[in-house]
Image 1 (cartoon, rainbow, N blue to C red):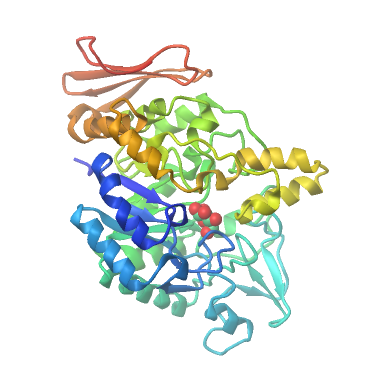
Image 2: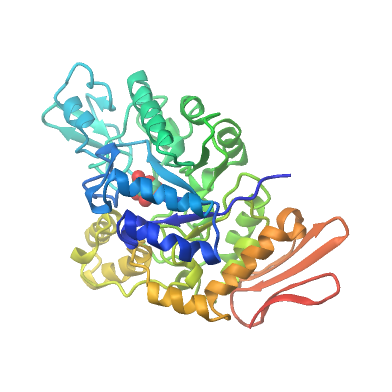
Length: 473
Ligand code: GLC
């Protein structure tokens, strides 16, 4: 029987420093009781991409406290039977990392730590714009699949692999339970040719190459750590690729494409796409039965789900926990039904690098300031990175019909009911207005689930006697 593990993601700056996070663990544990807490990066960083630009992997960023504060957090979590997962940002570092500074200066040890080319290729970065930038110091071009402040490491260099081996050992000694691995499947490029595919030229030169899988296997497998991958590639991500990664290096994996309901190949945030329920529910039904799949409805990379879908958050909880769900991941505040923030119409108020890039792109395309900002406001990742309202948390804790208590009950069902845990999935009906009906079946027992994202009918779970177990009115 496959293992069931509940992950809870924290984007640390939305809570405070490590002491603040430790202080909130009892509250989170009381209702959610996750097996793991995944902390988005807490390492030293100039914070160009919200911590996903690391300048020292073995140092806690000053904004979060000290190593002692980290040890305290691990100890508190352990008391509540929760393992801490760190976010291993392995594909790139910050431009401020000493490795990059030395590499730029052609230091004999570090010169090949990054990908340097004499001439740039036409590859595009995930945040938009070219993926190669010129360094005057080195008089060469370096690869950055994300922002120019996030140079890509060269995993063809065994020294780089050794650095990460040491980093993993360092944190393992600090008692962590494992890692979420950022952009896990784009580490090693297999050629440096001009890309011919429109949209993201170059993609197939680095998309889950054999080398990448072998490196991750060597670094992560059989270490006694829980490992969960964030693969890049959304729609292009096949079951074969998924199994390749999870059979070899990971216990679980997201498929970022399942968070994406837009009619586009990648989650590009320069348009407000209409929700395509048919496509989304089909995708989820395909991936949900996979024992290594991590079902996530929200993350730090997407706006809040109840705002995106304009739906009662309880219906989203039903989708996440009543479909087969072996490694569900709750994003902080999701369990309160948090909505998008009331973000400003001034781009200078946005901390996220992606929002600013989208804004610039839209302006270049001729959109007015107002038009560009109305898109950014809706699609920005900053919507999900706002401070948690703890007063609201406590209030919902007390009120038995709150969203938080709904999550708590559905999680209990998910943990204890054999049909919900291990039953097969049979999809009955998927409609474009957001109706999703399915059966879960184990032996002779059967449940029927009716979800309605349009809110026109009640969503419910019925047992084989026709009795309603859960209903959202
Ligand atoms: C991942 C992270 C995202 C970050 C990017 C670059 O996709 O989830 O927040 O910007 O990697 O590190």
